[in-house]
Length: 133
Image (cartoon, rainbow, N blue to C red; front, side, top):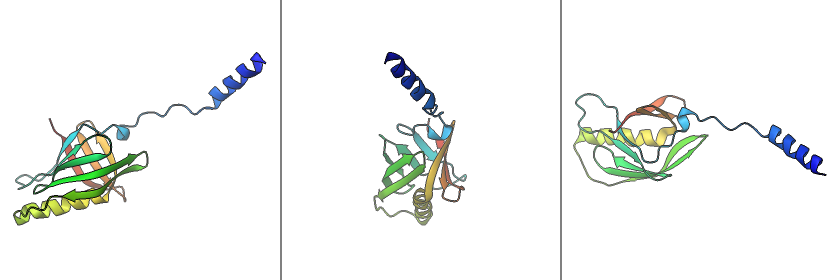
């Protein structure tokens, strides 16, 4: 009986899939802060701060924003995006509009050292950010 049990345990261990390797794209985002890569002279620079798992917030260049973040092996998405409603100069409002659109289009995140890239459904980068120091 003991041999049968030992053999069953050995077979079960051999049949188990190997542990998943950690992908650079699976790095935790909670507790990190990022500043959007921008053109020189931009009047407003959006930011992202990933809080406890599942929440993000920051500055759009005009208003404060917040969102629910769903992240899994399948990707990443920002949901229930909200923001304050302060009116700003037209250039800052345009940056805010483009930033909000980037958040809503994001389907994945890639983290490479000091760079965060939000990737859209088509696999193209929708926004790039540098880690805040």
